[in-house]
Image (cartoon, rainbow, N blue to C red; front, side, top):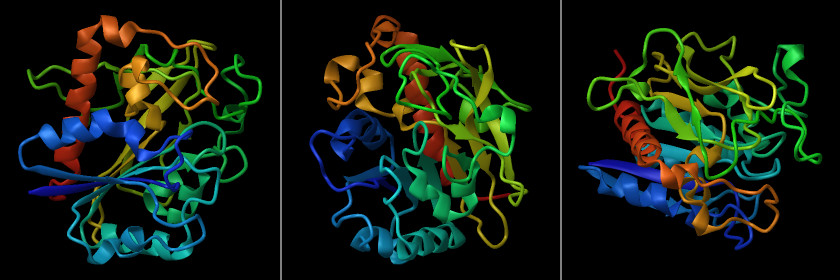
Length: 284
């Protein structure tokens, strides 16, 4: 049995990206053979130590899928240390965030957290990347790569040798994921020799390529595998079916291509299944 913890970095707030807005992901993971899912928000405010995150290294969870939906205060030092110890004992990590500084508390994680670039913290080391991409939402600054409307899908492509995350069940290569008007920035940390970009997309606003996923194969001192994902919107109910709704602060008009194109949703679910399988595989 693979035990997966789906966890947000905020307490339960109805008009926000609480864990209930990832219910379709939770249901799909739970439908996979041998997978058990626990989905939860923080039980305490940011700054205080959440009992589950703080005890993660000693738990029986095999994977942590962390949705950093906070504005910078979602993780404290004790929680980051526990997540690091979790990976050091072989736990798998999927860490994701969104645009600008949303989810920037993952910067304090190190490792997989270092793959995430933000506006005010840990900016992209390439200065040419620290400029606006999406201009349709003026109050959201870089990084904000425009891959399409919520409710639509985007074309993705493999980088380098096709990674197991992108392998389709029929032996082909996955090439679609949900779109989002302003995805965050990720890259390979200089201090992580086991990391590489495995998937990228293209901005529909500027034509610039941007990274979708960075995979960490594991190292002797931290054998747990990891994935940094450019936005949690690849996994949110609203992006799998926009009829599920979203928080009131989301103002961009949604699309519906992912409803009209079953292949896009099939590939998204295959990607999720690949993530669950790869994160628990033993490091070679």
